[in-house]
Length: 169
Image (cartoon, rainbow, N blue to C red; front, side, top):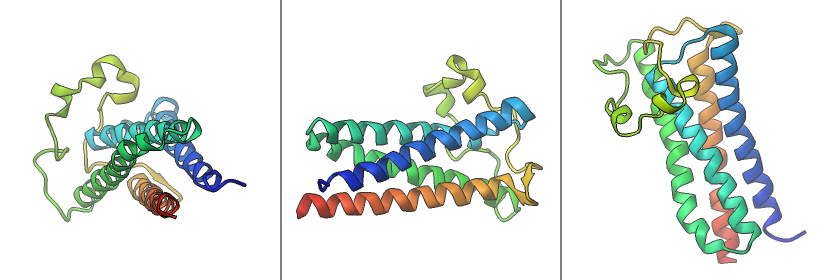
């Protein structure tokens, strides 16, 4: 087994997790009518970016262009961090710990990146932040999402640490 195979296997788990969470959100929206808020849509964007970047890292490793991963790793970690950041912001709004006049910490992103115009079924926000009454097993869907993206980000950090160790060693 070569030294890069464990990293690629872990990156594959990250890729599948990102796209599975995005797919799960879309299923809940389109099959069960769970409308996403602006922060939920931003989290989808971070998951899409994370899945795509992890695929690009796998591809760069597979073709021996490790220097490309120097560009993709920081972006992947930033996408994972932003998913946790946005979800934490949403939980704080929902629990009433934080009052917010705007659902999003970056409310004007839609003007510069109007994905809701190109893919409304994925990126159109119809829900209101802080008014989530969706639950699974009695736990708010927002809390499940926060747990999921936090574990995903922890995995990203672990894999990045391992990849850094392999690059040095």
